[in-house]
Image 1: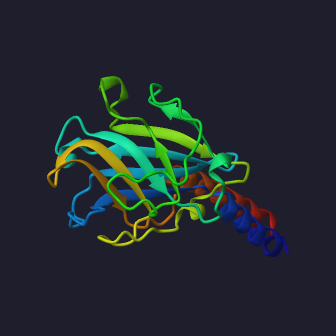
Image 2: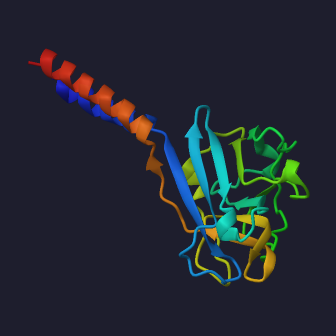
Length: 215
């Protein structure tokens, strides 16, 4: 009886509690110049407590053709159409980033048609070393809980396949231009390894307890 009652409940609770991470490899230059085989940067999004999302963006200066390559803007969609005025960005890394207090929609998308993505965040022009970022991290929150699944709506640029998000990089030296907008193919949410280990350990212990006391 104990097994029949508690085991299904345990599995449901574990499944609903595991946080997820979304990894996006930025390989598609939106003008169609790339072949999808080179990574120019990455975006990782993690669900954190309180219904917030933690973004981490990195640039690959070598692939972008210049050590001065700079993360300029991020573009993304949200399935539940949260008003931009209801979105807040905070907890920046590096601390010199900002101040940015809101998400813009529509944000003029550099190097691509303006209507590709619903939302955008401008991290500032890379006009000098203090504002030249090869990595950026921040937390996105709203009055409603945000989940990885909200980010999976894709945009379909004219010159490349569907992409989930894109980043505009400045000070590049590829494809004959000094800036590029590069997107990532749709990502699939995956459980975080640390969280999986934690819950797996707990599950083994609880199953042992149930087995011992359910006889």
